[in-house]
Length: 378
Length: 127
Image (cartoon, rainbow over all chains, first blue to last red):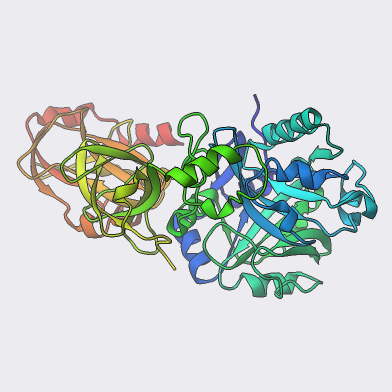
């Protein structure tokens, strides 16, 4: 199957980016150097093309109920312009994906103007936009539509991934950058709040969210206007390599790497995002998660630092100091900010206290390591 | 993009170089290799006194994004390792043919150097 490309593929290529496959998308992994890009975001600002992220809208009289029953968080608590982080779980409570769910303003107008499909009028109920991970947009669309039909709900589900680019402007200077580029106020947005704003003359959905541990914004931008909006940010272009090192330092999960329904099924409680689970709502997987919350988890997602030279990588074994294998590394890197080898992975719950001594087996050589609180970088 | 490849040394297809000076062979990775790897954060090399064998793995170089095995261009005994790389692995990026060298080897068969690719042949491979 041919890989999908973001609308700015040629622009990035011209700029000298190197590319990698990410969930079936050919995305820029590095523009200048991961370290340079990482440091720019920690110290000033950087802009990422994250157009591989999906966009799915749900509207109609039963949009709230449908979405409520398919994510772990309480969608009904969202007011217009609010968003929340949530997990999508199967009947066993294992995460199929994680996502951010936005409730759009009830005018619905701007989105309707941008897309091919009609958006319901005010009386028909709220419209939600949620963002599946790269390559998961099709399965999310299928999941929403098949459950809608099974439950006989009245909702329109539209996969808009090919209609929108997505950019992330991140770092301590991100608010100033966005304020300069936007005709509408944006710096008053609080964390996880979003609104339509005209950026470089283009209607964009602007949210104060991000995946780097820094202040920042994510913009959902009409596909055909992507270049205009991208050009409005005079800061370091960053690839997915820096995005990975930044999110590991922040202790954030990466779908498909830190959990995977096939190779590493994990519940939100195991993965440390139990705060996204609202057991007083009804959703697929709720009963399994209620039982796990009652019984407690066997494994927990933790951060650690190597105290010897080496770099932890996905798939390396975690052992006790005596050599008993107890877990697996799911993400790791040499932290550009700390200049220390850091990683994320699962260990039995009794090993999750900060300071606990473990070992990480790096190419058959056990290296001393220590459980560490996350985020690694405040 | 063109990459540096000095004429005074031999090369492996796997992007290591070997430079002989006064009977000692220094080994490192090429400009092309460091560029492909990106920011080098870790180098693992044998100890002084260990033996290396032409064509066999002798260590690992890791960048933030990738792990890459290192292959020896010659056989012989390791007489020195570049310990500066333990604290400053970025030297491999900054100066791959100079301060970023990795090993010095006393070659057991100096004729092996003649079997390496010339700079011109290597440049043809990576361009």
